[in-house]
Image 1 (spheres, helix red, strand yellow):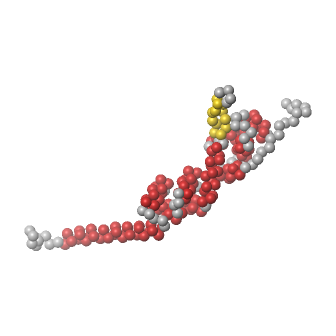
Image 2 (cartoon, rainbow, N blue to C red):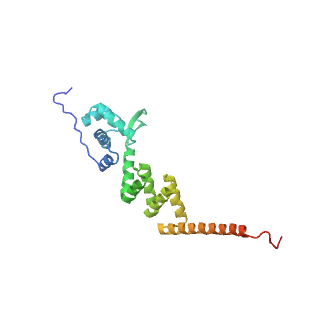
Image 3 (cartoon, rainbow, N blue to C red):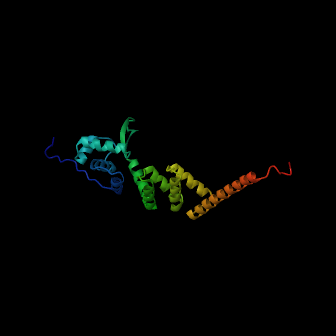
Length: 219
């Protein structure tokens, strides 16, 4: 009901960089974007769907649909906290949305080429956890060429789990390698040593076969 002489409350929204990045990173729908924009402007952390509906000029059903979708994507959550009367109430928390953007920002700062290489080599899109793990390697000082080399070594061995790639990087850094040239020299020498060991074994086996046991003077 509209009361004559009483105007509807006016809401003004600010669209932040966080929202714009999330639209791209999480492929947000219009409803999801509007609901998150309302929550990001922090009019109230109370979950009051009627007020949200009024502010966004959106049906309560569509507001709930957008909010539930954000919950499923892990961008928002419903927490419980005590009010001034020491009673618990449900409040909306959007901290996870900011965390997603922080990860994206870190990755962007470290460069995007390595992430494209991983996706091309693995033939799939990387998860947020995998992106964060690669970024962690970069931030810890591991060179890109070693990370990519470890990826290719894992694929060559038929194992593509990130735990295995992490183990390869750990072993290489433990040996003090700082470039793939050093890794390749080590692997080459290791292969040569194996070939040499094999030749020595074959030589000894042949000597045993060729030995004239019948005319052994020590018999």
